[in-house]
Image 1 (tube, each protein chain N blue to C red):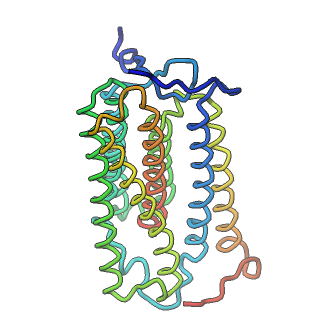
Image 2: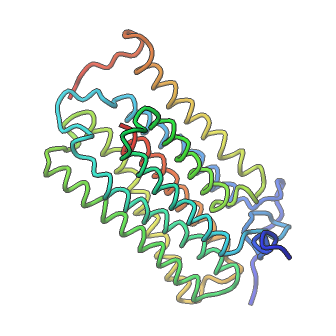
Length: 193
Length: 122
């Protein structure tokens, strides 16, 4: 089997990985601006529902646990592809994607409940900032799930092998970034009163 | 070979280096990090429900959250083992983002009215 080697670069680093870390850096600023907006408008809503009336800590704790567990599955997928285990790679990629889908299910349940309780994106500044921030995060999770399912399909067809571990690693970087963003959101939006 | 050394055993590919083999942890190490993350998350939720800790809730949660963030970035995203260039490309905008968040919080919630007053709009 022909193994594709990346040509040497001036930094000695793979440009694909360096480019993706740069993208993650820009995403950090993107989510930083959304989190800033939420924090600035925190407590500024003059009409309800207010955060303490709608936020469901137990349910969100479970979804947070699911997302953290999916990050573990993601590194195990990387570990498997680096060992050349096709079955292990496929299993853990699918486990990660399923974890992401469960998280999205929790988010859909949360959004639906909030709307039934009278909180829409137009209700007050809390609703606007909350839905924009968590909605963009959910969109990132959705993109991640599609990416993971694509990698799983390619692995099942035998098109992802040990020599392609960087493809899985870069997908993993994206997935873990989505995870760390949620770590911040969970603390700042849900747990800190 | 010690357990720690075994957990740092080399595997092929993945550091992003074009000319050197990678050095990533084993699955046991990843599972251990996962368990620590779970325990920290449980501690965060537990702290939230303890009335006696209300006064120190925010600093405790920020420390626990920061620990989780650091564990994922260092070990799951491999910054601990990868080139410092990757760390720089990530940490520089991260510090800028934190600076923006803190500056806006200070401007709108700490400084006297008039510096960053929000008019109630909903």
